[in-house]
Image 1 (spheres, helix red, strand yellow):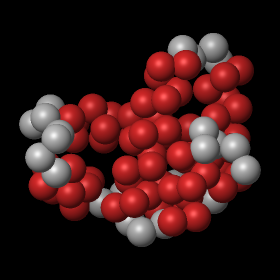
Image 2: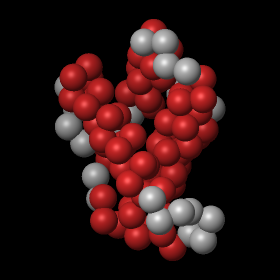
Image 3: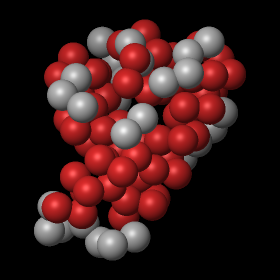
Image 4: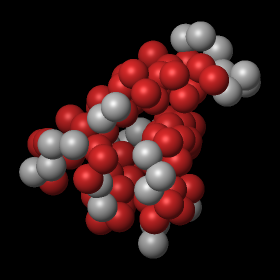
Length: 98
């Protein structure tokens, strides 16, 4: 994950608060932990649609609040926009569904 590049990307957008990138990166790191633990994957940049769907399913199974799930969707969508992974932007945008 390109943490510094993503931080700069977020800060370049005027609607983001200075603390926003820290929150986004914290959530992305939690997604990375999920990938390592449940999907045998080390790097967000190589995520698949299946990884995103599995993550969405896991969030629901673990009873995450819908608000938190929506926030993960937003954060993942932003990161995949940043790294130009349009296929994953659409999957994250739809709530980790097909």
